[in-house]
Length: 153
Length: 407
Image 1 (tube, rainbow over the protein chains, first blue to last red):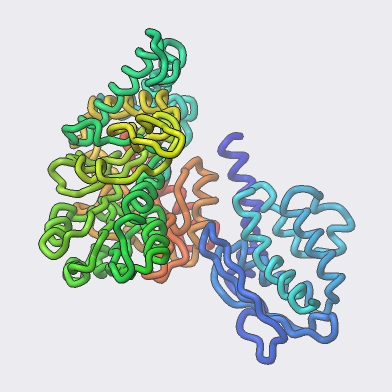
Image 2 (image 1 turned 60 degrees about the vertical axis):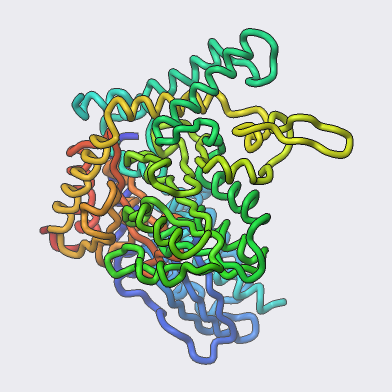
């Protein structure tokens, strides 16, 4: 691979939308009365995300995240909180799988079904060209999965 | 010899002229002479050392022993049989913790390390302390990133059994005053001193016999040698009194149905078929470094590190960690405001610049600096000004991507 190919991939990774969520994260902070909180760390880089979830039956009625990390983990967390609010555990499970497949390069972000379910989160599809960064993109999603699994049991 | 020529000695660098490898503190590139030495061992001398009565096995044995002697000379240990080949620093430290520590550390004893240590010189001692009911003590650093020698002195007492510290920090590049630390330990205790040389053997002139330490651990792959080989230097009396680390072939003298007697040094501590080809490769690396001269190696790295520090510190938002340049080896640990080190490393990768981003396997240190991560550029014999230019322009690129005003 040439350096210019790599530069193009980097431009695709750091889209304005991602940098915007990194600089001005949505739903960041503590959540009073949270049903459950899960802290997840990426031991590779020391990033840490705490996810606070308020459940109403099997629906996520509200959620917030705190912690610090790279632009990819922070933007992914910020966009995820927007997407999953009001959704059921089963819907979230499906979204997580779609997102996971996209950042691991198993599905095309331009697929209509991906577009329909993930919407603006497709901005993170550039991560699939950077295997070392996939964990960053999945950190918040893994925390959410743990939060929901812990609560259903 | 010019640096341009030196890059030509390294096949990977010669084949990738656009690559700027600045992660030698993690592992170094290998010169052709090292690769050739390994190939030559297999092509001309391959047999199991110490085993056969035939000439080929004798040749393999001789080459393995010659490699030991070359490295002993390189690291300043007069008694070459006090150099034990291991898989590297991690195994060397585990060897001491296991073979000496389990036998000699008792409930209520103390083990002292410093906050600079990477995990290889931290976790084995922490675990040994837990296992033996000993107290694990961590000497803190001064603001400048040096070991706080006053606190160090106050921590050493008759209860101290082991004191373990790095020669050079992998995260900050701090060069510790080893001889001063050893004399503090020896004045106040009968503790064993273990020096982690993973980052000093590649970069400084090391003289084990003069340093006064009891043990010195090092890795081959960080000093131009192959992966999977390194060593432990120890004082003969302590090595002889120690139990074996692993048991099996080669390390035995006589094996009876119900008991076994141990071979002499160094074999007692080298169970199984030795990693002879890589030992030969590592000896070639030591000879290559000797050809440059270790004083020149350090001078060259420091010059590059200072030049990188000068250029980077002129940019807005750059913070540099560690002691001032003269007390530092060729390691530059830094952060860029608002750009996470992981993002910085990805963007630099796009410019062909390889740096490390993360905790540098030194989480206790990073916690003390209140940093989840830093970016680290490290320099070695093959680096030159073009690598620094690429580093600086990559950092500028990161500032541009993240919307900083260019300086």
